[in-house]
Image 1 (cartoon, helix red, strand yellow):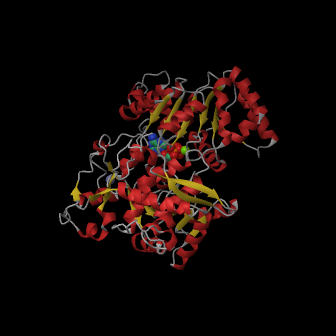
Image 2: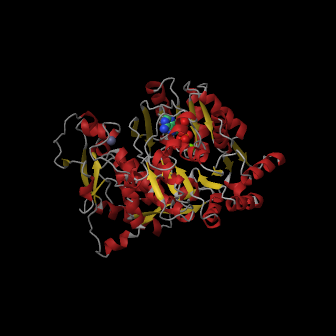
Image 3: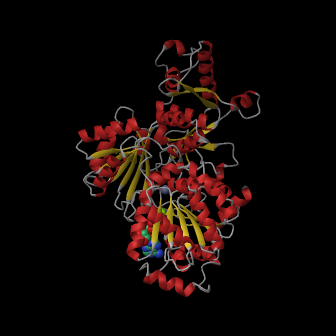
Length: 595
Ligand code: ADP
Ligand code: MG
Ligand code: ZN
C-alpha cells in the first residue's frame, strides 16, 4: 500500500503523470479543442481537464479528483462526443442526472436516462441506440441500482461491447464504492465486475474525495489497480476556517448572534449531528428572527425539494441540516457553513465546508466545538468501520490551536502544502500573527494516574463512568461517592482538563466503551491499552502535552498582542515546523495522522 501511496503523492505533487497527457499531438487533439469551443462554449481547459480527457481517449483507466465545481463532467462529456458509440454514466442521484440531462440538451448532445421510470418505448429506443451504428445517442445515464438489477441492460451492454460501441464507463462520485469514504452506497460494489466483463472499455471515475486510502480502495473495488490518478489541488483560498469553543447552554444563542452580527441577510448552512439537533436548532434560530429551515432524511422528498428551492431563492436564509444535505447542492453564494457539532470525520467536514464560497468570494467555515460532542459522535459512529478513528481524527482537528487548519486538511488529504501557512485564512494563523500563539507544557502522566485511580474506584463500586461523570469526579464535583480522596483537584480549568482527557483518548491511554440502552448508545471511559505498556515501563511515565494558552488561560491569550513572559512555564514555540515533533518524545497538541 505504501508504494501506491507514494505514487499518489507523486501524482498529486509533481503532476508528472499528467505531463505526457497535456500535449496537443493526439489524433483527436484538433477536434477536441474545436468542439470544446463550438459545442461547450468553453475557451480553455482548467488544470487536469486536458490530461484526463486525453488519458481516457487513450483508453486508459483513470481517476479524476477535483473539488466540487472544478469541472469534472466535461472530462467525460467531451470524450463522449469525440468517440464512436455510447458512454455509460453511473451516477448516484436522479436529480444530478436530470440536471446534466438538461444541460446536455441545451448543448445539443443526445443524452438519455435509464431508470425505473423509463417507459417501454424509451427503453426500446435506448437499447437499439446502443447497438445501432447510425444512432446519435452519445450519453446514457443510469443509477447503480438499475445497473445492478437490470439483466437486460447488462446483456445489451455486452452486445454493444462486441460491436465496439461501449465507448467508456464513467462513474461519477466514485468514492461511493468505498466504505472508507463518507458516502458509501452498497450498489456501487456491483461496479467491480465491469472491468472483468468489459476489459477493453476504459473506466473514468470522478470524485471530490481525495483521501489516499479511499482512492486505493476504489481502485481495488473497480479492479483498476494502478490506474492513472489525476488530482487537482484542494486548496480553496477564499475559505476561512475557524473553531470556536462554546458552552453547552448558550450554543444556539451564540450561533444566532454570530449570524446576526457577522452574516446578516447572507446565505448559509448549519450542519448538525442528529435530526433532533436539527429540529431544535432551526426552531430556536427562528426565535432570533433568522429565517431558518431544517433539512434531514426524515422529511418527505417533496418537503426537502421545497426547502431547498426556498433557500436557493433566498426566501430561507439558513438551512439547518444533517449530512443528508449535500450532494448536488450548487448554490454559489453560500457565505458561511457553521457546524453546530463536529462532523463524524474530517472527510465529511471538508466536503460540508466546501459548499461555502463557490463563487470565489470570501466565505467562512466555523466549527462550534464542545468536548461532549465528541462522545455523541463516537457513540453514533462506533458500529461503522473506522467510525471511532474517523471521529478521533476530527477531534484532533477540533482541538488543534496551533497548526494551520488548511495545512491540517491538506495533510489529511495527502495534498502538497506550503509550511508558510494560509495567509491568515484560519484562526490559528491569525493567532500566530497576533503573537499570542503560545502554549503551556503539561505533563499528563501524573494526571493520568489520578484518572486511573478514579476509574479503578468506580469499577470497585460497579459504576460506569461517562466522560461527564469522570470530569466531575476529577474536578471534585457531582456525586461524592465517585470521588477519590487521594486525588487532588487539578489546578487547571475545566477546558484544559477536558482537552487532556481527549488527548489521552486519542493516544490510547484511555478508551471509550460503548453500551446500548433501549434509547441510545452510551460511551463510557475506561483505561486504554497503552496503560499496561506504561505500567510495565515499556513507555515513558511522562506524557507531555502542549496545551495552547488560549485554552489554559484564555483571558491572557486573548489580550496579549505580544508574547507574554510572565509565567515561567509558558514557552513560545515555532509551531510552523510541523516536522519537528515526529521524532521527539514530546507531542504537540493534536497531530493529524497520515494514513
Ligand atoms: P464538478 O462535477 O467537478 O463538481 P461540473 O462538471 O458540474 O463540476 O462543472 C462545474 C461548472 O464549471 C459547470 O458550469 C461547467 O460548465 C463549468 N466548467 C467546466 N470546465 C470549465 C472550463 N474549462 N472553463 C470554464 N468553465 C468550466
Ligand atoms: Mg459532478
Ligand atoms: Zn492557516
